[in-house]
Image (tube, rainbow, N blue to C red; front, side, top):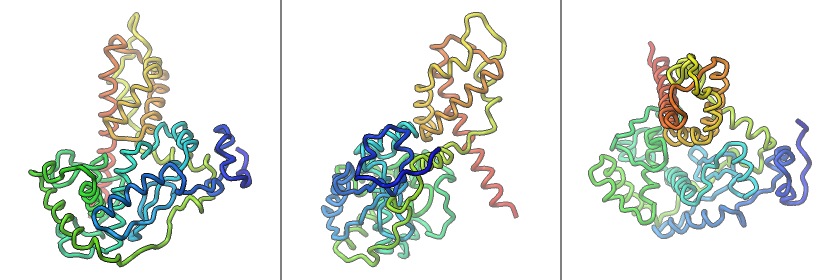
Amino acid sequence: MQGAIPPAAPEAWAEADDVALLRWRVCDLALRIDGSMVERRVARLHAELAGRGFGFLPTCYLTTEWLCPDLVPLIGIPFCLAHPRLVRLEKTMMLEVEGESEGECMKLLRHECGHAINYAYRLYRRTRWRELFGRMSADYDPHEYYMRPYSRRYVVHLRDNYAQAHPDEDFAETFAVWLTPGLDWRARYHDWGALAKLEYVDRLMRSIAGRPPLVTGGPRHFAAARTRATLATYFERKQKEFSKGFIGFYDPALRRLFTDAPTEGRTRAHRFLAAHRRLLVDTVADWARVPKYAADGLVRRLAQRAEELGLHLRTADAAAILPVGVCLASLVVEAREHRLRALHTRETKP
């Protein structure tokens, strides 16, 4: 691939085709929140905070992913959301864009805002905060944590029961639920253990809303304006990250789903997977809660291996779609749980 192209007039890249656009460095896109697609959403978040009595409105900036820098009350918003051309490119490269819809974007903004408020007022230092949520020093990997889908000790805001990942995430999710306009959280969580956390957040926010923050800024980590990687490199790294964790169980899974005994009139397994790839990707991504890019890569690899093994459907095409989709989603969950058990075993060995 050719190297990055030099900066040009603002948004000269917007009319480029995908191949040319991928050569642009992120920092040369000259993206801004002001005047962008996300400006109104940030304003909406700030209005929600102001409506709760807050004078402190966290600063937002464009980054390479959704984030709030550690202990810094800033909110990072993925740069691709700042322009419709980049949204289209990310859909091509990743099959979906996290936060594209206004509803999902606001949920993510409220979550990151929870981190920002926590850091701005150093709430994590309070005794009652630690009693309810835990210690900030707890081990943390946002991609490797045990989920208890039916636990009522945590609110449910973002997918993957994200409140269970870490005390900091638990608070951010609880804050996001509290901040959501029109949500009667007392009724929604009336018989949940998480209600005590929501009531604490409600009291705490009322007590600090009119006060100046203890921390107002800090380093802007992963800022798009300083990201010198080309879009091609950016998406390549993202694809590799999203594709982790689905290796090593292809053959047993395929032999459970399909048969190597050819039956007259039965479709070849790889052709079936290719023909129904989009539906299967949507099913796996939705049920197993994984990025669509990861699900798509899994279906493609399974199709390739199914062809090598000479597998066929056990039933007619129409009857196979649902069982195959359910089985693939279950396998993804199984693989994830296997990794978590292995990780836990390594960490707890004497």
